[in-house]
Length: 239
Ligand code: UDP
Image (cartoon, rainbow, N blue to C red; front, side, top):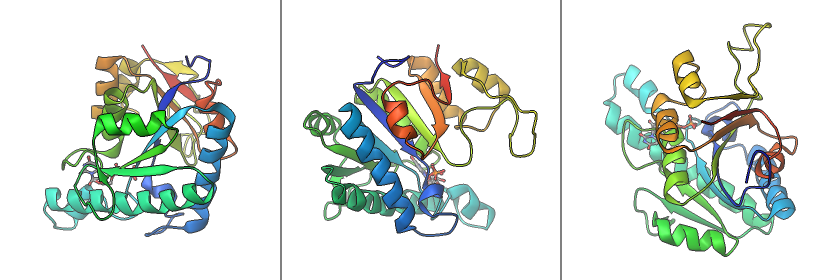
């Protein structure tokens, strides 16, 4: 599956920054647009979709550290921020008629289920979208790394990284470098060696060590459906 037939089960990584529409907090219009794309992708393909949501629109531990906070405490704030994004996405997905469950790595029973991998798989098999919140529950980690880990644990075939403002991996920053060239494919090793800031190195090396492919592509314009159906889109990082 993939490369390029339809995937059976995927993990979709959405960065928190998108959810804020460029500001702190959640922009409901943006989340609604993302939910529509996800719902459409599921309708078209029937692929099982799990989602890891970032939290950069609220807090990043590293930024709080720069402003004098202890990193681990800032990281917990970052993880809590991801949960608000999960709830917003859940709301708009349900409005699209998609059944969802949120599972969090930090227990908050009134709000979401705890992360239980086997239960997550059952939800997916029943056609529910599972949204993973609170990252990995561990400071010093990122939601990119969480996406890689969850994909491995629940048996997904690929990590789909939907990005805003960029449609794949380039050999230089395309915003500041008009000659930057986009890769159609590359290896994890190449991505690490080039030091490109697409995903953090922990996430990429976890995928590399376990043979988990990553597709980096531009969010919106129906691209989630294309990525889920295994179409050639963005950059495929694989062995
Ligand atoms: N975070 C963490 N452990 C995790 C996931 C996230 O400590 O397993 C914290 C970290 O401070 C991070 C913040 O949560 O900066 C928001 O997550 P991330 O930066 O990955 O979100 P994104 O960049 O995708 O919006």
